[in-house]
Length: 114
Length: 113
Image (cartoon, rainbow over all chains, first blue to last red):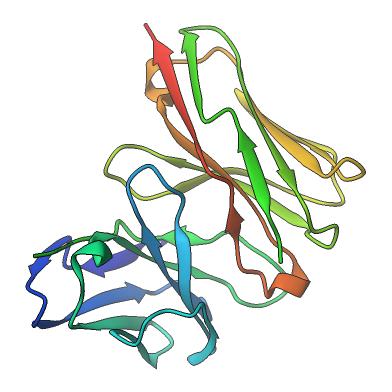
């Protein structure tokens, strides 16, 4: 299984809502990532978890809150978002050991904030 | 930190022609250079990668070359087909970047039948 699975595929939320994005992988990878991608732009790194511990937080606003319940799951909790937060949110995973390796991406959650 | 520049931003070729996309990186400690293809509305998918101990790598119609001295690497697609139409991203990383990928700005490749 070389899949990273994200749910939901699409999400529309109001600025006062609280929602969560979910990501799952069963490749035994120990590094998991959240990226934000705006149209016609490359993915921008938001958070990195290494061995279930947050290792990188790229100065992301506190309205985004990541969580890694176990080595297979990664969540992104959303609260009080702004319309400019509308984007494709991609989860990815990689081995996390022995040097840089391929990052496998999920299909993404298309988020629209209204 | 690492900075990756990618050119051109758009590339239009006739089916059967070759396409070349070039990237430069700034951090001489980077040692892993993947290329991702992203079709419209889909996830980025790795198409080929190269490590700093290798100068060239080929996989059927796709090849990547790396010049460590000049700090640039290139993607070559031969005999292009309409299904090669997508956005291509180069990336770079290494141990000192915690293996976090820094992406180039992307190249939109259009292959005309």
